[in-house]
Every structure is written in structure tokens, then in C-alpha cells.
Image (cartoon, rainbow, N blue to C red; front, side, top):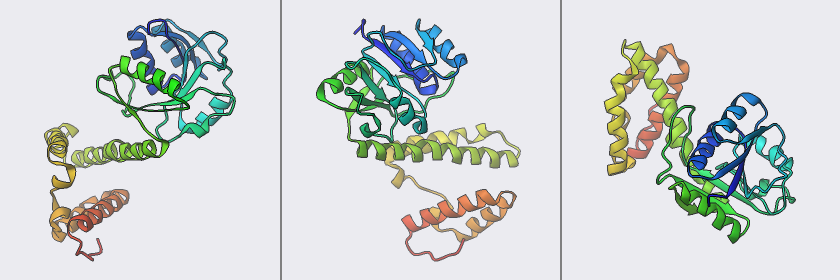
Length: 264
């Protein structure tokens, strides 16, 4: 698909990672549309593309990928001007095809289940992509693009993808928040975050080897109320962390013991 022509709306983390990887796979990147020029122009230069502030496509793009924040997606899609034959796809995990205006006939979802960050290279090999499309022809095109990236491709419904996006929030975003709390607390003990690295690595490895539901340990799993209460006292410097500790602890106790009425 060397002559396959792709343009992007958005120049953030997802757009940047996808655009650069597609460019490295010899796709022709035509235009980067972004509201501000700094990141948009930089991304366009890296992919030999042009930059624009307006989502007007008068050339022969085969695919336009809208990789923008979810709350801006409806407005963006309703303001695209492009040829009728052009496929327009968004990358949002929790939004379906119903977000597209009637004027866009060839539409799809091109959702990579991954967290993207600035200045981090992400391998697309075996990366799961979840696709949805208005018809089989659009689906086949999106599938070919994803496969060229080395991805694992799944066709899903909107409801399935929404649930997977929710799973990702728990597995990634909430986990990162817990790690931030661990970093704060280890700092209170006078140690850097690195002191937790062996523990974190083993936790993740064990979760995949044995299943997370069979890997739980700790005071909540044992319903060790004495240790739990001491931990809550130690968190007196942060009522917010005390609240999180209580909620998560009670959830673990309920899951593994089902017999605790303790007020934590």
C-alpha cells in the first residue's frame, strides 16, 4: 500500500505515534491538521507532510484519521470537508460510529489499545487494534493498514470496545495513579520510587502467569485489621489517600473474605 495516502487531524500523542509509524511503513502522509502550529508543524516535517489549521481535504486522501480528545471529536467530524470516497476514522475507544455526521459515508474506528507518551517509541508489533466500520470495504481497508503496522486486528462492536476501554482505564490509568501514590509514600520513608521496581515487576509478571485474581496478597487479602488500621493512621498526612486505601481495602476484603463488617 505504498501509494496509500493518509492525513491526520490532531498532532497529539496518539496521532504522533500512528503518523510516524505509518510513515516508516512507506504510507504517504499528506496533511496534518492541528489547531496550533508547534506540534502540528513538527509532526508534518517528520513525515514530509503539509500542515494546516483547517480540516479541508481537496486532494485524493484514501484515509483521514481523527486522533483528537473525545470531547472535541463530534465538532471535528462535523467540520471535515473531504471527497465522498475518502474513509474517515477516529481512534476513540469509547465512541462508536454514531458520532459521524450523515455527510461522511465511509467511516470507521481505528482504536489501538495502548498508552502513548511524548518521546517514547512504542512497538506496534502484536499491538491490538480494534476496528469497526460502516461496511466491509472500509473494514478491509482499515485491516490492511493495521496489519502493515504489525498489529493484531480485532473487529468489535461499539459496546465491546467501550468495555475494553473501561478495562484499560482500570489496568493502566488507575494502576498509574496507584504507582504515583506508592512513589509519594516511599518518598515519605526516604527512598526513591526505584525501591519498588522489583515488587512492581513481579506483581505484573505474576498477574499474567497466574491470573490477577489468584495473585493477591497483603493485609486486605488476609483481613489483617490491625495492620490495616496502622496503615490508615500512617496516611494521616493525606485524607485523600486514606479514602482510597479504605475503599480498595474494603473491596479486596469483600472479594476474598465476604465476612467482614469492619468499618475501616
